[in-house]
Length: 424
Image (cartoon, rainbow, N blue to C red; front, side):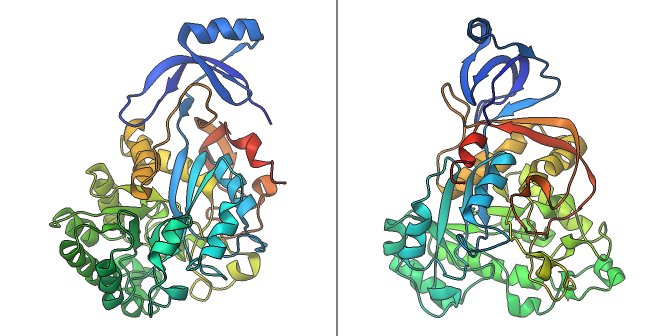
């Protein structure tokens, strides 16, 4: 697939720190060739006709700071190649992959095997902080970071504090990010939804607020003791968590799961796929606080945190199946609806949280539009489409939320799409 466009007066966001402008742009075969008058002149020579830009937006690719891919080469519901395609068609140019898997990425071999794949979608691999994610003994941190890991992470819950202190004291990670989830799975127990009136009404087992607050306080205290460690917090989910982080002596960068920004435990039917996520879905108050925390830069980045499951798993009751949802194509449209249409955000603020902020959290270069580059996406906020599990047939993962619902807003094209098919 190759894309050639001439858009006159299309909305363009060039990069971090820039403002939204209307400009003319020429794209040939997926590559940005010219802006302004030069774009019109070159388009005439190439016989590329101007198209109506409507309210479309040309902007840098998105960045997902962390998602799961447990079997990169053999998994039927998702593998590295289908992940690259799904991410590309949703406008993502960078994806961070967490270490949990059939082969934990606590050794260099599974890291090197993924790093050999050629992809313009940049795959960033988090190495395992502890061996097999068991929180019993440390992996070889320096060895992992020297062989392709961009940072270290354990699982989606806090490992033992003594092990964290041991790793921080050794300091083999240097400036590399350390991503830790402030979640105590023992305190959470079987809790499915954050403790609230809405949870009681829905009849779900409650997840106490303390399952996030107590480990968060511990991690912030640890950051004070080891200020040189580039600590990152995974998926803050409560109003209390945002407030504690806001008033902290030192504020580590922190992510929030995209689903927590567009839904809460008052707005789903009992059978919705979206109940089964980690961390647990919160109340309307939690959701409002998370949005405000992003606005005030208390929270740094929005994660996709994809966790693909097949049909045999998805059909289990919500309290029996593995936690997680998976759908890259919904993220930008639903966040646009919630944050731009309803909350009055500017495009610049949204991109700070779904592209530039995630890059900072990963210690990677920020995405930007530039000449002779194919790192761009074209988004139409008014495009209507229907979400289905079968879209583009990239994957058999079926834990995609709001199936068969009408969605407004869609990534129309991305300069990385043609390259995503080269591994077929």
